[in-house]
Image (tube, rainbow over all chains, first blue to last red):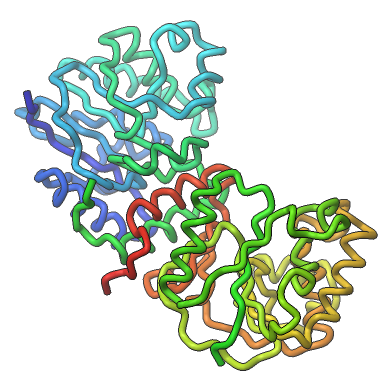
Length: 221
Length: 219
């Protein structure tokens, strides 16, 4: 059953607004849903003071109260192909890249048992809202430089979700990590996440190249 | 001037299918087969050097009749057909300004130069061979315990070429560096996947392969 969802992209201070717009337009062309883009001025005062990665804790504050599912996209996620039908589950995400997830599993038994998702792409149902409220508390309490759980909000969100509702897993192709060593997954990628590159500008140059090549057209296969 | 031999140095490529794709795409776009130099094609002394230095032996592995080499690193994506190249002894694209500033701060020689080229792409005439011979000596003597910071062969090659020749500087579209050339890349001919990490560049190249295949980009 296809669920009804609102796609939300956090683009607090995107250095290239034309890329932000293109990514949103491409998502809409592929998936038939208009992306709600959240900018810094849209944030409540409390969210403006936290580490930017933690702003997703306010996700439910950015959508109408009638929204049942939010699909979250980082501002460096390239929609390559149309998403498959998404399951109606409290929290849906794709596993993080191999190696990275395993390192987290060594630190946290819950992650070793239940897996580890990359927080750059996920779908949350409204009954997860208490989890995001908890994440807000973490966000406000965290010093901006504090990486207690390693990767800003990501590990905290993993632990909260796993303790609360669990994760329904999507295939890795839904959020292929560009710095992984899994080049095969790039052939069938649904979303490509340009995160973690040794040179931060590289992701924008590569996305700009792809913008000139792909536009909003769909791919065969 | 459009007479050149494209050469790709591909020592221990972890993804042979990507090496083949880059060569096939370059040939489809530019009508010239790429000569791929692998480890076994190199002389023994070159095989013992750090792989980046192997380009010092370029003139030893191409036919004696080759007048010009167009050199390509193995992590470069051919995007569009190259225009005619200038009839120059050595042509290349300036590296990122931050790197040039770093080199100027480290080496007095570069204080007088406008640019430092990125050695992932260049066009060299046979007359520059003496510089490559000197680079060989340097590679063999110092190996990979190089005194040139993080740039391996790039800085000594810049030193050698710029001491002997005037470099013809090409616009960034000829060699878009992924860590630098945002504005140029929509019209770029070659995209060098710099700054994307040791494994990430292959993921991104595979994405380009799945999108582009061998077809020219529809403008």
